[in-house]
Image 1 (spheres, protein in one colour):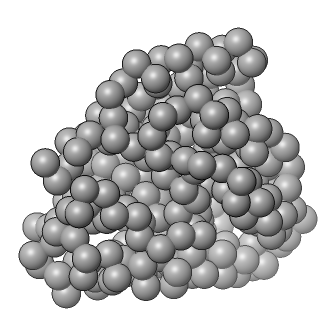
Image 2: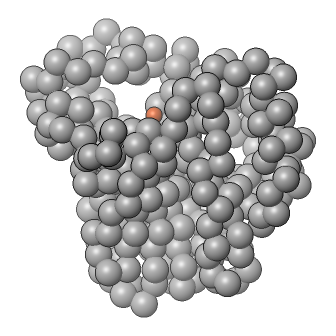
Length: 266
Ligand SMILES: [Fe+2]
């Protein structure tokens, strides 16, 4: 089967005409589904972008959200909006609110709206600050200790949901595709050609997710796990186990591209 992968397309930097042109470009690809690993836009326009995908693309659009998708909003509000959005859509599959999506009987797709858990690197003292800490209601105005606690809490909630679905998916299909915005290993947090350093990696990777993926993968050596992620905007590949491959997406603000066409389960 053929899957088109999109990540960090950041449509908030495009006007309506440019978004239309991007959708026309997507329609030229003969794929069975689109897989979208977050940072589609910002909270105020996210539903609008997703509805345009739903109306214009002829195949399922399986997506997870990223940190930017919450800019100008809160996690609870965005989740409520996503539930309403997918309830009236015909092709949108919000993976954080779905059981594994099986395609062609061989490929199971799972995912969640993951967060960096601040468990790698220099989280307590790094001078690096993300706009997340000023633009997402849940993270705004927190001191460092509260910020780390909140990030770990958000990350762990997503990982708990995702690990249960991963186990189910591994029992269903020989190929499992995992969609996550945040890379699950520090070695997969590629930025400008190399894994992120100790000051950036607390905000660029989710250690708890990596551990969960390896737990499930070790229990299912007969299953291949392909993990698609973004967030760091640096392209790279990392293989933490014989049956686990992690691909990280390249991205540039204002210039969305089809990340890759993937042949899986054929
Ligand atoms: Fe991101």
